[in-house]
Image (cartoon, rainbow, N blue to C red; front, side, top):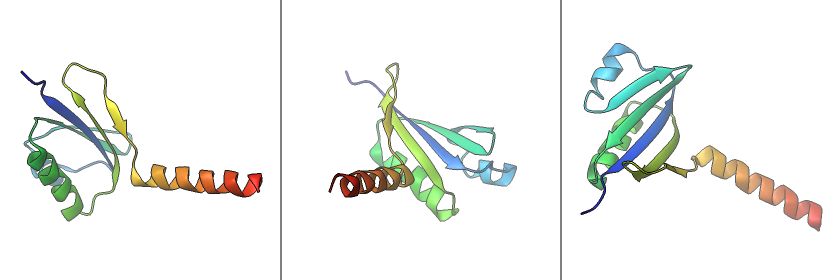
Length: 97
């Protein structure tokens, strides 16, 4: 029997009431300029549906964490963090040459 997957998504900004209603099927918390969404389920299409909604409302995805329910979260780096990492690697490479 497989564990249920849990996805933790953070988007920039605090969702107002109307926008929260568009995500009423997701556990949602708002704090310090960030909205956190918790999506439980093993269905990848459900996760993609949430991500499509985030994009359609023009929300900025900060990051996405994934894991099995009851286990530690596995962090997936955001695009901006991946870009910063690549920039840092490029700087190190230039310094070494």
